Length: 237
Image 1 (cartoon, rainbow, N blue to C red):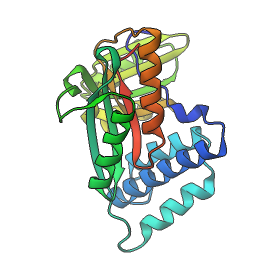
Image 2 (image 1 turned 135 degrees about the vertical axis):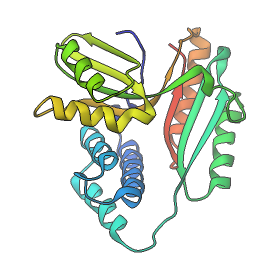
Image 3 (image 1 turned 180 degrees about the vertical axis):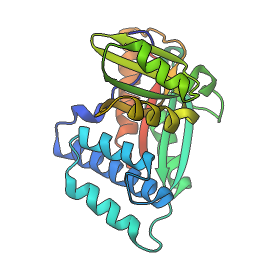
Image 4 (image 1 turned 120 degrees about the vertical axis):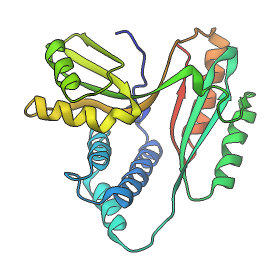
């Protein structure tokens, strides 16, 4: 594979505590997506993608249904997105994406994690220029040309497309996510995505020594434990 992207850590969750945090994050994301675009996954492509990812992460059906039922109600919680950028060990760059109902609390919690790991929280724009904000779609197949043709015909601005070991990986700007996904669904009957996500993909990765790698892992673990944190991205190889 060429470009490195994040394989979600929750798929490795083993303890009940880790699973509970994964379920909570997906429930929050489903709720926010359903509130914004409606509770019908067939009409809300963003919601459909979140639900599919939740199922792949083995989130129970009752957790998904509860989040959808909650979104059908009037009022409810008011979550907003928050993004923090910082510097990890060895010159590494870190982006933290959150959904929060209390930005002041979340900022304090994230800053404390960086401080505990002896890393530095930066300002917006400090490291995001080192990443591409990309839609990533991975599916089984070997006809890269047919996939590319379908995307081009749908006027999708494809950043990169790779075919390796029976899987096709499509990278596109995050703003092209819905168009790219629909183009592939229309072109290939019964299409199922192994990865269906929007992520920050590092333009280049850096190698860390063993000590720095341990520091970065500690930082990521601290951030992962926060309820408001949805995703953590970095450019370490």
